Length: 355
Image (cartoon, rainbow, N blue to C red; front, side, top):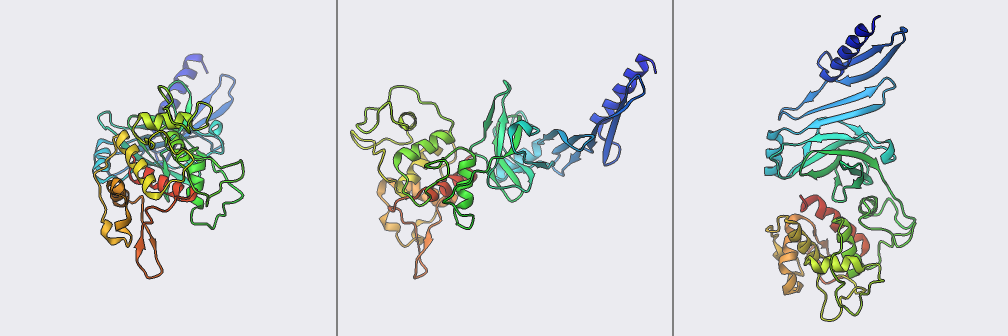
């Protein structure tokens, strides 16, 4: 075979791979000058959903996926914006054990869409399955606000993105899989939103203090502290929470009381709701929702300064209350929020309030 013939055949083969229009899959091969035949790739036929979104998966001869592409249609993006639901991409991936071994999903969204929530279907998805954005400069970043559904990983995109899906599950000796908060703890730890108190210990039932909450929201926002550290008597430059407190105060997420920030004070559920509400407002998320507070037995115990935030948290589903022995439901607004409860509320915040 001449060099020209070889190049022509190679070009034709690659075009067949890219087109993916002949049958369920399309296999392309190249033939070297010495007659050696090598399979290049197999492309699944491009799938198009009823709303016009498309997806395609490319595998090599061993069956390893080497490329995944998905495009969200304008119709799907508009529908998702109105309903608040995610657009399920017409591709399915397997979570890799490390980012180095993961194949990125190249996602295209309409240019005019402000923010599109998408769901990447994942085989055997787990609470510790995370989405990792690959930036144009090659750096990678876990999408901390991503959540998991029964079908895959859900995240919001403001433009096209290259996304890897990785199983980043972390386990702790004091968190049993049978506990109600097990999945919440796994979610928070795998996204590096909240760490354990040691490498193998999470302390789920311990109280959460103000410093911890500012650090959680700081982590969630991938924040950077700008400006001088606030002049609180209990916050110094050497404290592990100094940056997060500086960030929280400068962005109106928290403010402290007088000369003290209360860094080591236990956080109540209503205080946590206020900080989440302030953070949502800072991010430009919708904060107009209000739930029916009258249905809770302890409604009158909510502090006046926390009323709006608590009603918002109930309205969007961040707070649900707990059932009492007599069948009534209470919010326990002024009760301390345990570390396990904080992981649950933060995950609900990302799934229901963040966009």
